[in-house]
Image: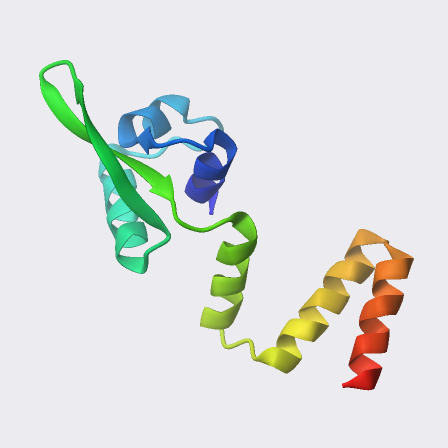
Length: 113
């Protein structure tokens, strides 16, 4: 999720080197990052967007294929969420946000289903 956050924040193709250099609170090893990128590629949440030359080497750049919202939905579904679970997750989010009007609308949807 932290790596996906980087893609969403940057909103442009980025290389592994850029992620490693940015680091922030997380300091990933090169091996860990490359394994994670490979896994993210196989899951289809990122894609290769191009190649660029950095010094003597060629490196791939990657970009997210999903928005944050699509990613959260994909994770929820992979954890077994069905349509009934989804509506209650939305209700919990409305309650957590403190938006009483939104919470009221979701409760009405639940009652009318």
